[in-house]
Image 1: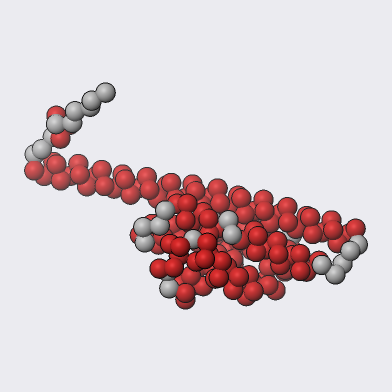
Image 2: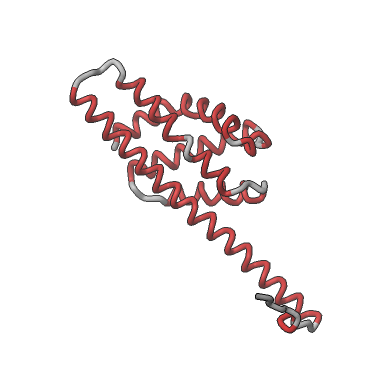
Length: 169
């Protein structure tokens, strides 16, 4: 997939520009994100994405997605907002790939185009699944931290709230 990586590198600036327009237009929550912050996030994301595309190893992408998760969760983004923004990448890439192969009608070019789209979409969907796992892990960690805090606070004051919890069915 070196060809797809080369294509991604060559078109990165245009892809980022397209996403800078589409993301806030499609996901209103991103209107509150400063443009330089969004641009930087997209640059890091596409860099990590290219690495994942070539190596198949998600280490760099995992780091970037952990950062995105932490920042967007602190900004009170819904999971669906971030997912929707990630799912805007394939249509942008598809359009760029179509432009690249538009003038070449050969059977080999069609095969290359279809292979590139298939690989890119597969990588995107794997990345989205990875993001969902990371987001879920982040929320679970936040919940566990809060439970630990409550437990310590209750112990500090000698309160056992378990006696006060009533379940009505």
